Amino acid sequence: MANLNYNSVDLSSYGLVTPGVSGAHDLPGVETAETYCPGSDAPDVRVVRRSTRILRFKCVVYSDVSHANLVSKLQALKGYLSPDLGFKVLTLTDVTSKRISAMSLGFPIDIAAIPYVQTAVEFTLSFRCAVPWWEDSSAQSATILEADTTGTITNGGDVHCWPVYTCTVGAAPLATGLTFTVNSKTYTYESGLLAADVLTVDTEACTTERNGTADMAGTADDCEYPELVTGANAVTAKTAGFTLVASYRRRYE
Image (cartoon, rainbow, N blue to C red; front, side, top):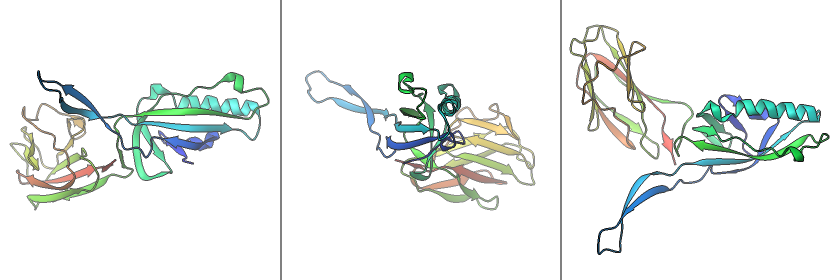
């Protein structure tokens, strides 16, 4: 039995229990494209993307009060599980210390199966996950101090992940901006920065904020947003005078 917490709501508070689950421990496959060359029977197979993870839960909602109370709980669950909410964080007691971004696909209720004296109902609740990987519930953090110019960040997950880099300028302004490299990818901000300015670089969204306000104008035309590959990642602050903090969630198959 895996209790669900979705969008910070403990669904067991509304009488929902899940005696069955599928998809939580699957290893998602891949989607491929095939190209055949004339005269060859063997295709050129190219991996397009990883397959979507679908989570399905066999659910029971019950009331120890009345049928009316059961209907009230179902109505509340419809609000908390509406597909209109989009992708929200989902956690399971069966997958410890991890979370996944998922969108509810709704759930069917057979009204004929709820006679006026019944106080429990069964149904299947499904979620479509934004990506097929689970990730850390709590973000990891690594710091490259202003006094240092190089460092290493270790990604102990199963696949690459996309950190948020926070660059805090020291006591001296940086008239030509700043640059840092992770492995072979380089992020460059070309506008001048004042002392104590903070750049927030979201590599998954490919966005930059300066002191909490979106600021893409200062980024170089060839700017890259470096991910963290599995294992050790070499970090180099090519501009002196700022501290770099990477916040990231390791991803797991």
